[in-house]
Image (cartoon, rainbow, N blue to C red; front, side, top):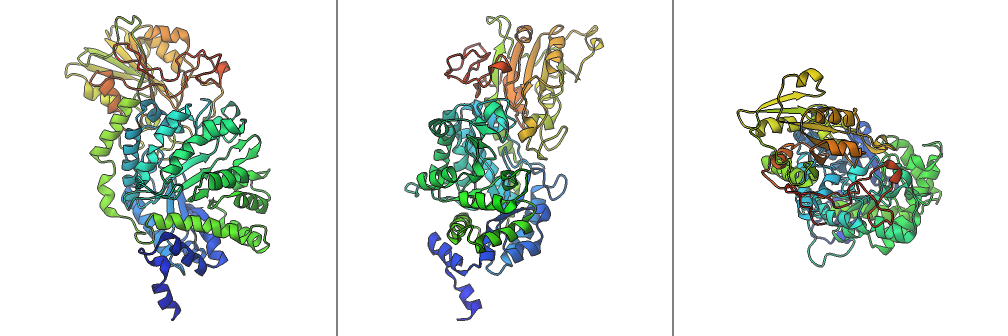
Length: 613
């Protein structure tokens, strides 16, 4: 039989053959160079068609804000991804590449996509079915852009609000985080009864490969320092931080991302015990483990030095695919040296490649490698925006309603004669969405399609009502004006990762002073837009009539108006303890000295009733 005939009749290309038989057949045909190529993930900025084809590159990614061009829409993304895929399919064995993105609250890199609340807000909803439906919608919008692989969900348990990734966590409480892992089934589809435990699962072309991250203990670092050290016993690590991974694995999660952080001083990316003995052997995870961005470089000091040592430490510990993302030529060269010298055993390479191919075959990439443009109509569609609006409504936590509990301040009267709207966050869609939106760190302004809080207040009020908006009102604003009430929207600017680490947690942009000065003159509702609890001085809390924690609600501001004007009841409950002072941190429920401003699970209804925890 000629090589061409053999390739046409090969087992690995036959969808009717068992997955494991297809993997064995393909691996038997691969050179060492092709195997190492499959273990390599590179950034699209450095990804040329020739490199993908000739080096058999396994995956391409867009880091946060790495776009085809500014305001690129889903169809533009699909064109770009298909171009890379075409190159992969032209390689000797025609192994499709898998394209990856951080769609952590909707397909947030793509202009016009639906932007859902960040995880901290979803944790406040306590609604696992809602999170599942958000997964379904996100999968559709991601697949519409040609992308196959989503670095979500983050199932870190945030134990300290000083952590810059606090908003990527659903809660400080492990059980709440475990319930929210329903996102995995939303993204990938629900495995049928009897599906083998730990085996990856993807239901079809409308679904994406998910990624449980960051394994393990990312949210438990000392003082909340990002990429820091989680000091914990094995029992606590297992009970607090590892438990959500069991739920993800039972749902057939395809991939797990290792954490930048350390456990008791040892970095997770070189932790053989946790990555291999626990995750793969004990928990039975059969998908692939991926590194974080340039994480191997962080295994040596200075960063990026002694690269061969970094590679061998990570691969031998159990990392299967490496998010290089830029210096892939050096990575491939050093990997080849380490394999040929025996420092990385061939059995470890084959295990990694088996896992990668298993996910690609399960995800249907060999049969359907290209984008499905029939899904483009789902992007930012009314149905998805209504779902995001529902999520915003359910995420809002009412912390105070009326100086006198017998006289609730909310709901606001939509027919009031004159309403003052103020604050840095009242008319800023970028601030409302937070980090991981349009760019990596997020930014201010009309960064995508959506409605600001000011937009929706203007839509919600009666025809006779006058809405006066001033970001920072001067004394002149109040002269001779008879405002019925003020809505002041303050909070944090967008941030990501270490850029969000904050030891003080004061409301930025002089938010405390702004709220106070307005509350001195007009009955005030304060709405806080933030990725975590912030410092609220007791005197400020006394001054204002009402306070809402709105988290980072995303593109659909209408959900806020729905509740504030009384069309819907408040349902949100705190996903984290609200501290009195940063000196108390870290502060968790069930601690002996627990004395919070508001406890975990706190939330009021309009009539002042506490929601049951």
